Image (cartoon, rainbow, N blue to C red; front, side, top):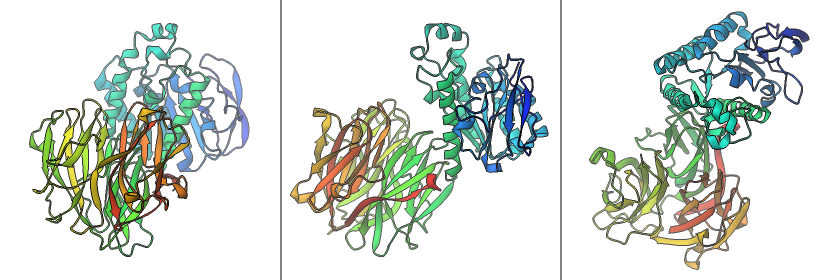
Length: 579
């Protein structure tokens, strides 16, 4: 028998005696140690539940689910601010279509005040006879019903993909008949993102690889219930502040007079799905190339050098809904050689051979794109690795020279990963790119330093590599004393993290100015990551790197900016999460 719904009057501030046989559980109020404790499905007693006036439309959350989600009902309210109304509803062992017909539709008819902007669906463990087509139809029907009723955001909680190392032997034996289809359910939920633009996945599968969250293998214990509830709350909060997919955000630059371009770090958090950002001068159309790529639920950061438009602003186009953070590290001044060009793709192996570039192959790229000075001393490129079968790295360098021992972009299997390279072209206007694994390579040109520029590109100079000793510890900074030749200039550098102990970030900054409230590179456990930075050392010629997590750090200096660049303490221009 299912957990029941309380047929309340939200307008009355009073305590009602609620039979456990009713259909739903209101958890918007309750004791600080866990909200209202609703009766178990097997209970035949009643309990007292306090009801309060419904929250505003944008602060109502209705969760409907089967027995897994119902395990969070005593903790759900505590995951939300006190001015929100949170409702848990559902019945164990129901299919998604039954949750819709016996809970969602009746509650819409009898308790429309329960429904606001946010509805969470937590179904799929009871997969309907392993029928993928039927499951897809039930997903579509549920979302279409909610959308037609005016629900703005529909969320679906992915299933725990049970792994034997995270459950006890008894739980592993019990789940054998059906755990195998949980990844299939999640794959169909991911596919539904393409059909429903108002759908967001809450990735319980990614959070549930731990051993302390269930009684058996999927049903939540108190620790799991708190984690589950917090994950739902965090995703709902993130969704309310995201920029919309297909939108362009204008970001003003302080004191833009005489500024040709700015060096920025662009970070995405809580993206709805795989996508990209493109940074460009406001007043222009968004170019057909990306500045930043991300995957669903990933925190990722990439650098860009962006021309400042006539309005004194830069613009960032977002292909997919995501939270956006933009930090500026300095300015390229007019008259010092930096020349922005309309970003354009100068190489795409997907369009040339159609096959990934074999590992170790050298690809020659003509970078004499329109707008690039014929005698450019260096070109500013974005090199992107796409559809890699395994983790690896790519290197961009001057054709005819020895392949450097330093990487331009570090990538993982699958997702597109970009990074900036500032490279001196060879005499015939070409740049060479090679990769350590089979991978598709994209090269986009978006700037150049012309003749007489103050900027100088040099052979990569590895100024730090902690792999020969101790990792940089969490919460620690390391100081780099740069050579006198580059100490009084901004530097182009590649910042790489390898062997990170967990998720975190690195920040490069002028030492005397202190650790900034912004990141230069976001990292995750088990994955190498690199990001280009343009930064000016402090007056003593020192550059510092801070890490929030234990990790090895590598810093390669790729050149100097001279007077072309005026650095500053990394400053946050935009953070949609704060809106």
